[in-house]
Length: 256
Image (cartoon, rainbow, N blue to C red; front, side, top):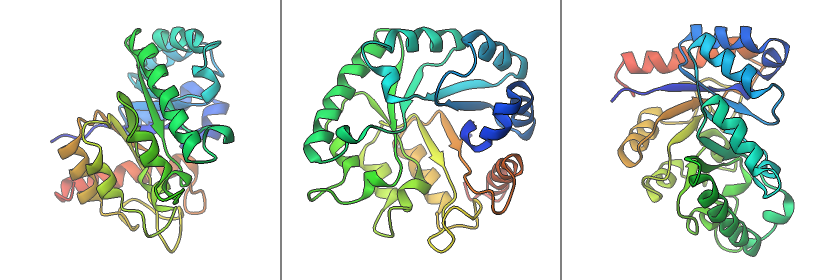
């Protein structure tokens, strides 16, 4: 099965802020076919559309602030993403009142279902992206389970490195199996229990063959999204280049 790789642009955030067009060209040249934007809309939709068309990159999703999918702003969010051709709206974090306890997470799940239905009317899809807190015990289970046990058509964007940063108890492989069909994208983020994020794909504590194999077995993955957070080993652009080269090397060796 052929894997398709995208880049979470937070990985090259400083370069992107200085020169969006030039950074996208460099990302494309590395071998990435798509990008995931993040945060506020710092460029007009027309500017982003033009840059994507210029480079041949696809916007596979946008990490979208929670406030952008509220009733007062969701239509503007839909309109912006329609212009750039993006259909995946992924929320990467929530305010404290939405995450402080089990009951808050269950209420949040209901809100996610409502927002998902609204986006579906416009041909768009809602997802959620984890950090570490979603895998820390809360009242006998985890927030990740409270959310995805109680949502319907909400995409599960598992970030394997972020999940592992919650501790050795986290089993990222069983989490992939637990929710078949819920993931359209996943984040590939190297993580070492000894070095944290200061490591590289293939040199960390993730069984990449097992992880990617399970993703492809249990989900219809459209994009494997690389996110690299360490600048201790490499600069932003060098880091993401090393990441995709490591993935292609593992493909050549039959590991993934």
